[in-house]
Each structure stands twice: as C-alpha cells, then as structure tokens.
Length: 64
Image (cartoon, rainbow, N blue to C red; front, side):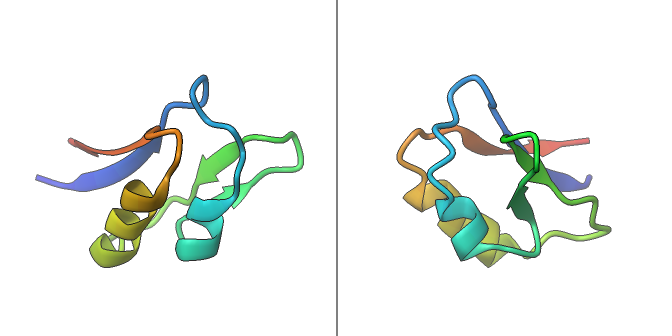
C-alpha cells in the first residue's frame, strides 16, 4: 500500500509552514493554494513534520 499526503484546501490558511518544512512535497501555486507534488515516494519524516506543525491541521496521510 502506498501512502501520500493530502491537504484539505477548505481548512488551509496558506501559512506556508508545509512549504518551509517540506518544499519537495508542498508548494503554494500561483493561484494561491497548496499543491502536493507528484512523487513516487514521499519523505515520511518531512511530511510528518508538516502535519505536526500545520496550525490548521489540514494535512493528512491517505493510502491507496
């Protein structure tokens, strides 16, 4: 089973912490919302840090 991070955009405040903690995974698009990069494997420690530090609690792991 593959795990990947998801962002609940309706709860996101665009604080940028996820992008600071894990720039290879998260980035704020030109349209003003957080996007998750398409990677074959996600750096678990970085994503876990982004989840832990997100003030909106809008990032989570999902499984395929």
